[in-house]
Amino acid sequence: MSPVSIVTDSAAALPPELVDQYRITVVPMWLDLGERHVHDDELSIEEVLRYDEVSTSGPTPGEFAEAIRGRMSDDGVLVLTIAATMSSTFGAAQTGAETVDGRVAVLDTSTAAGAQGLVVLAAARAADAGGTLDDVERAAAKAIEGVRLVAMVSDLDHLVRSGRVPEVAGWAGRRLGIRPLFEFRDGKPHRLRPAFSVDAAKDRMVALLRRSAVPDAKLHVAALHAQAPEEARELLGRVEAEQSPATSFVGRFGSVMVAHTGPGLAGLAWWWER
Image (cartoon, rainbow, N blue to C red; front, side, top):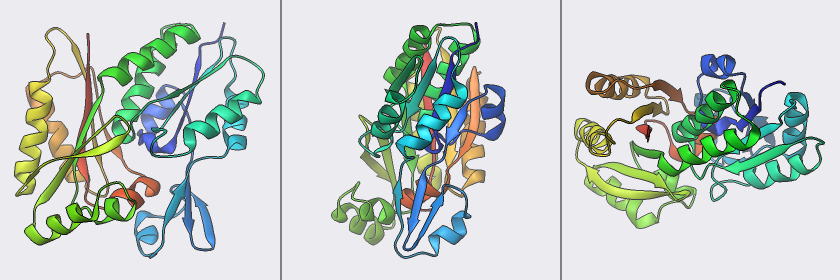
């Protein structure tokens, strides 16, 4: 028997070394730049941000079908996607899976970025341990139930343009010079009380993780960023100085995610495995 195969989309922001280690197939998302239609990371983030009008879309059903066929194993394939509330990707994965012979499960992670990456890794570890497709799906569902994502952005302008936060929030952030904070849960961003400096925002995020600690549970954590690697590494370093994570990595946003958040985002995703 060959192990369950794992497929996800490029919103998961997984480092290449973890993709290789766990043999994860990543299906790239799409950027629409006027007349240009390119895969995520075909252009640099700097090039993408030069465009006034940028829209994004998920992989096509055909792309998912091709990825699933290429990874079909004796015990099947689990596909894990960005939140269905954020993208058509989940629906495309379901449609693609229906065209493939073999056992396939498609799961909406209800999250994105580093939090999605942590869910994918939970499933990959269960597959590596020899779990059946049902076992691997349960491992992913357990991570989905517990995972949290909090982040700071340099401003809310990109999230306002994408329709994910109201215009009044963006106006207030610009007017007051605050550092906006949000938590991604239930498939959408929720504004948190803003911080008045980058350091204060970092303090708040680390404190949220600390207060959420579960006794005798293993911590899985990712520091995520959009062109802010130093901020992400500092956040992860602060967590590792207090905790001993079972999983820890820095996840860089691709162009599709930066198109929605803008550059300068840094944050933490984590869950406690009982």
